[in-house]
Image: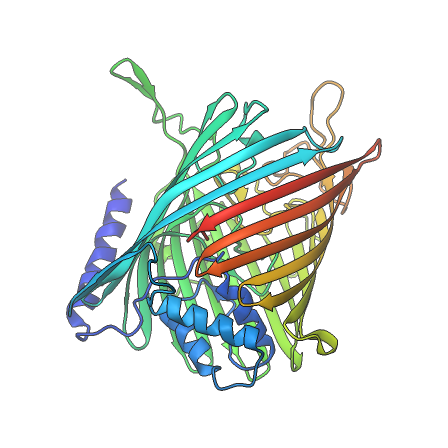
Length: 539
């Protein structure tokens, strides 16, 4: 704990210095826009048309997005696109969308506060031999607060949630809601909650923030290989800076170990109760993004380490993790990646990413060189169909990617992967067509095919490790070779449709249907899933 306190004191001293030395009005200390906000698909359309350069290091700030939307307002576009741009500018500039909007605001010359409720009600029905037939209801109630105080920007959000089902909830894996932090299993009911918050300071060339949130680094929209919004939010300190074509981000983060990874050195009885602690787990990562006129390149690396506090050499923004991890004894989980996106034609963006887990230099055949890659295309207004876009992606993740010899270093937060959600020994095809009928109404059709090579289980209960589970790294008795799609192959195909109606800002009604077909070496089953959602300020 001593080094944690030292780190926190150092960060507070840095923030205090910047606060004292800063000008009277900050540059961009506005809060980040959550990754599920509907403005991001619109930004992808504007970026594909080459109207504005949108970074692939996300989330973006409110002021950052307002500037992008304002910059394209003079372009020739459809009434639907212009309506969406005007709607999001009004929202992000904190203007009310209608007369009796449920929000409370206060401001003076030095501070401002905006309070808003958030809520979501979702009903899910699953039928067919591919599912445990059930009907589930999820209710989320909470609120958010954002604003500024002198040169500091702040944001906080919290919700309480409950999932009801006509089937019992005996394990975390039974819960349909995702992502999840801690859960309270109560028979056919489950209670859970989550908070996210941020305190930010910025000047003309740098932005520093601390808080708890989620990140997405890369051009993928079904997930990214290094950091995706697949896991619950996590605590982080982040530094962002930019100059010309360059944009650099560095984070030092505190993760939560998977349930069950107990620190056996910190277990005692207090007041008759057994008190236990999970093992400590950390993440450090940085990303350099280089933007050219038609091409954007991203380079990044990250390291997950555990059983100790924050490592100074990983916290420093100028550190090179590939060398630092070697200096510290090669006991941590180092990952390295790169991505590129290019505007080949107006309205068409092609992108790709590669990812190396525990890469060994000069030895491409080494067992520790685990690899993943992602390819994708995004086409706006294909064949002249206005207000329509098409996205296609393919992802392949080799065996043992995200796993590690030491369980504490698995590339996950809680029990959810920080990277691509399929996990190792898997590949995925994805295609989606979306059409916007108006600023308030859109519909999409999707197709997915996902294959997973799972670890077989012998009759005596022992596991044959083929690298199909990120939570099980290579053991001493496991082979020193690996083969893609070995083990028990499960193929999941999904075809579905989705309709979203947003009559006013951040009030949405959604309907979704998906047909599932699951094929294994022994069987083929099908399932149907219907989802109805009503949400207010929930993203």
